[in-house]
Structures are given as C-alpha cells and as structure tokens.
Image (cartoon, rainbow, N blue to C red; front, side, top):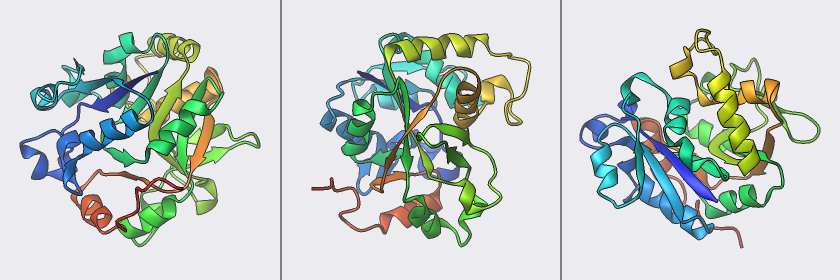
Length: 252
C-alpha cells in the first residue's frame, strides 16, 4: 500500500508560522507535523509515500521524500492536489491530509478493513472541539452512517449534534479497484457545476466523498477513539499543545 500526503497548502490561519514554511512543516510538540505523519505511516508498515506539494514545496523536497507538485495550489483545493499524484493510485492508496497527527493504530485499522473504500472516523471528536470553542456546532460538520457503518452524509452544516456521529479524520484508504473507479469518476464529473457552493477545482474533499457515496460506491467508516488532531489554526495549535502527554500513545 502506498500513501499520498496532501501538503500543498500554506495554511493562512497558521500565519505568521507559515510565512516561511509550508503548513505541513509547522512544529507540533517539538516536531514538524509531516515528520510525525511519516513516522506513523512507517509504524503502520507503509514506506512508499509521496507528498503533494505547493507552497514552499522545495522545503518538503529537501527532506528527501518523493513529491508531486500542484502548480496551481493557490487556486485549487485538496481534491485537485490528490489527482496531481494519480499515478500513485493505480494499485490502491492511503490518502492522508498533511495537517493531521495521529496514532499508527488508526492507519492499521484502515488497512485491515475489508471494504474497498474506507474512511477513518473519530468518535471522540467532541473532546477536541470543546477545547477549541464553546459551542462545537459552530465548526462541526455532519457525518451520518447507515446501520452497516457506511457513510450516507458528510460535510454539511449540522442542525444538531445528532447529525454528527463522528469526525471525518482526513485518512482515506482505497483498494486498487476502488482507486481506479474513483479516479475515473473524478475525471467524469461536471467541471461547470458547483459542489456545496465551490467550483470544481476548489471542491471540499467532503463534497467529493458525498458524490462518491451518492453516485459511485459505498464508503465504510472505520471508527477510532482519540489519538488524532487536525491543526488548522494558531488557536488549534495552542489548544492541542495542552493535551495530555500520553494522548498519542498507542493503546496497550
């Protein structure tokens, strides 16, 4: 299994830290986010990794990891970045957001799940959101599943916490067949329409997943309980630096 890390963005909400480095190299607990991602992937048995770069991509390339550039990173979103590395998808791939830190056990659970297309879902998301804001609904997104744990709705504005059955974690695993189908599906989408209010090149990844779930194939949720953060802003960074020292320790 190969991994594709999406790390093209600057991370404007992490300025001034990202004035001189890409978001994925921002230090968290003393180590760059990307270094921790690569370590977790290695611990889960994944050593073939490519990083999609954009802003200050030379700094990531200097680490010696294979890269694929997204030349249009300033005018596109993460779905577009993924398909800058579509040559890595042919035999299956794990897609990883470049601004998350996580236990390797979350990746292992994704690899072990038999579904062709699976997404990691954090059931303990509220603990993190309550560190960030008084009302978790302010920034939460819907994630609803059917009785078999397949995602039926993702990425919408929730009306209540009942519509948030977990937090999409930015970790997606596709089998070879699923990856080929997803690639062909993407290239067949209508480039003129809007996707949750965004144009084709800027669609959210959750919008893309919703299209897949509605029109292509089931997406299996693989739940986990903590040991994961997404660092999107200076306030996130400050809040998560205060997490317990053992927050990312693997369960015995």
